[in-house]
Each structure stands twice: as structure tokens, then as C-alpha cells.
Length: 466
Image: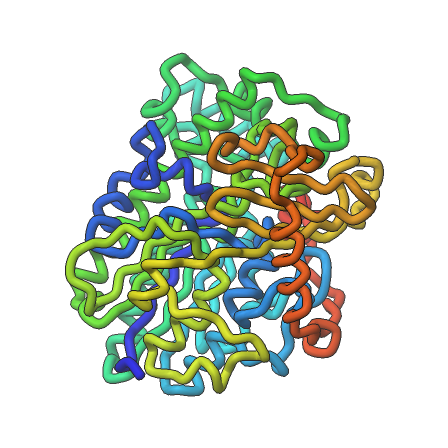
């Protein structure tokens, strides 16, 4: 078993792999992460087990699939009967601290359990979502040539990096004989996208007004239900705003890691930079992270830096990010089989596993009970099995899908009815996986309680989940 390592686990919420420069994106969005990847293990085909935040984080905390742990963005909350990653680490002497800018990743879904310290950010809304007075202040500042939006808007990642540094200075360094587990969910790569002007200028050549930006940031549920529409120009602008937010977040990740290096906090530290899921910007007529198991949602960046691995390595083989639970316990000197919650994962840093990857990875989507979504055809429960070449999506109620990922990476042509398409082996793999599921979600997941703060509830609605 490996010696105990410190862990820094950074989640860049809603960051799709194909918008990261070192994963092949044409625009320079992530210069610091690119540099970091050169000294780390870069997984080019990392696949999330779900399409949304809560289910994926619960999978990281338990090593289980969503249909096993039972946690969704509209469902239940984790309780103490699960062996949760932060709690397991704390039980083995780790100092644990969590910093979440996503209101879903916190107390309301039981994600704060096992942390000595857990910071949940307040609800940060762009200035035009905050009523008359902030709007008036913004207009007044603009009239005098001041920063306007840049001055008023609260920059989440920047403040979170400062809080993490403060925790190290005031809490950890007094007891640095104990290892640490620091988790951070940074939300600036999540919709809505209102980046600072200096980042917008990198990706948008023309003049863009606040009204242009507001118009591009339409509500995904209203667009999905046909109540609002997005033009190709709207999507083009939104993608560029997304890229600007990615560049801003990249700078903040750089600030954090450079601070930790100066303070000698990286020498024995396992660093993970990843995302829970991606986002859709009009692909196949879809917007946001819902209604689909396309790679635009499931294919995420995954970079792991291990202090014992000299130099960088690129892994082209397909892997599932659900294995981060098993991987972290293994490299923290803890037997993952003792804390398996009934499912045994893989060590992503095992040399043989990196060489061969997984022949099949799996992901799930549940039906949305949201009344506005009831008539949307794509609103169905789905499960998929993915190989490096193909993806089969099983759809409840009919309409199964099969995609050739080599020839059709955008998944535009459903080949399910074609003779010789080879769907039967994929169906068999999905059925075999279904037989391995440890169905303990209904007993180990407690119902959500009432009393959720009204501001948090409003933010969840803004994020498109309520």
C-alpha cells in the first residue's frame, strides 16, 4: 500500500474536455493547465458516470453509480451509512477541508459530511439578475467610465483561492504533521457566463454589450421546452463567453498551485484537476447539461499529478472518472476494498490499467420530473455503454441510439437500425453491467429535508435544475 499522500481535488464545474487546450481545443483557453499537464498524467478519454453535478460528486464520494447511491440533483441526500471519501480520509488522520461554489455540492445533498471545515459560497448572481439597485449602480458606474460589471460582480474562483490559502495559513500549517485532503468546486466554468472584460477581449473580437451577453445566457429549461430560442449567433457568443470563463478559471488554478508550491505544500501532494460533466451549446439541438448522454456532457478533462511520477504521461485509453474514489484511497495508503461500498473500482494510476484502459464505460440519465420538461421528447431515462469506437444508448420507452464515435464524434447519425452495426455486443455489455449494480440507494440515501435557504433555492433555479 502506498504512503499517505496529501490530496488536492479541483473540480472545474461543467468543463468539457474539447474546450481544454491540452485536450486538442483550437483556442488557447488553459495555458496553465496545459503546463501542469506536461508534468502530470493526462487522460484523453476520461468519461463521467453521469451528465449532472450531484450524481457525479456522489459517485466520487462513494465509488458507486447513480442508480446505486440514489443521489440526483432532485432526489435524496447522502447519509452516514455510506463510506464517504472525505469521512474515510478523516478517519485515517487526514485534515479535511471543502470549498464549494456550487450550492448542490454541500449540505443540502449531504456532500459536506466528513469535512472538518466546509465552506459553501453564497449565491452569486450576475448583476442583471439582482434587481433594480445593482442594475442602477452598474449603469451609473458605466456613465462615469468606471469598471461597471467588473467592479460589482463577485468573482467566485478568486475568492475561493483566497479562502483555501487562508485555511492553509490559519489551520493546516499549525498541524502539518498530518496529511490534508482539500476539495474545491469552482463554478466559473458553469453557466451562466458573464466573464470579466479582460478575458472577454481574448475571445470576442467585436464590441459586445451587457444586453448581448444577457441575451446569450438564456435559461436552458426555457430553451429546451421551446419557450425561448437561441440563434446560431447566440450560441457562438455563449461559447466564446464560456471560453473566457475557462481562461479566468485557469488563471485561478494557477494562483492556487503557485501559492502551494511557494509554501512547500505540493511536495507530497496528489493533485487532481477534472470536471464533473460538460455542457451543450446547440449540438443536436440541445443546450445546457440535460437530456443527453452525448460526449459533450460525458467526456471531461482529467489530469492527475503524483509526486512519485517523474515527467508527464498521456493516456489515450478510455477510463471512467468513477474510479477516482478507489484511486485516491489507494494512493493515500488506505485499503479501498475495505471501504468499497459494495463495488470495487480501479486504480487509474496503475501502469497496466493506464496502458489498456477499460473496454466499456457506463453512464446514466434519469427522467426529469420538472413539469416544464414533461413534453420534451428527450426527457427519458437512459443508460449508455461506451467503447473507444462506439456508444450504445438504451432509452426507456424506445428510441435506442448507436453512434460511431470514430467517424461521427459529434453523434449526429443514429445507426441503430443499420445491418451489421454491431449493437448486440454492446447490449450484452450493458446488461452484464446492470447485473453488477449494488442497489443500496433507497436504504443508504436519506430524503432531503425542508428548510433550504431561499437564496440557495433561487440559485438552483438559475442553474436550471429546479
